[in-house]
Length: 134
Image (cartoon, rainbow, N blue to C red; front, side):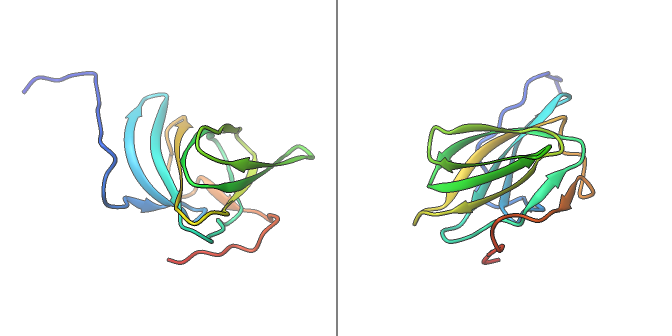
């Protein structure tokens, strides 16, 4: 069998995991410097506020409508989410997001370095009460 440095993936139909924030995760591809996943939050859902210990993320919204709250070093910001929105979540940033639309809110996220495991995320205080269906 031939070894290759390349990886490819189609978006899995089944959810691979539930993120610490409560969103559904479908794993895509991984490199030594980062990993890519698809995150989804259902209509009316609000994630748990979370902060990462060692990873940064870049998100690109592919479907739905929502709001993202982020806080780091005394600076807070809320932005609207819609398809085409790109944003960063630098290491140590507290964040929370919510679906304000009628369709799933979906994003593709790149985690740098790759997600290290379940001890990575910690609960923090956020602006909204979490509301998750599953």
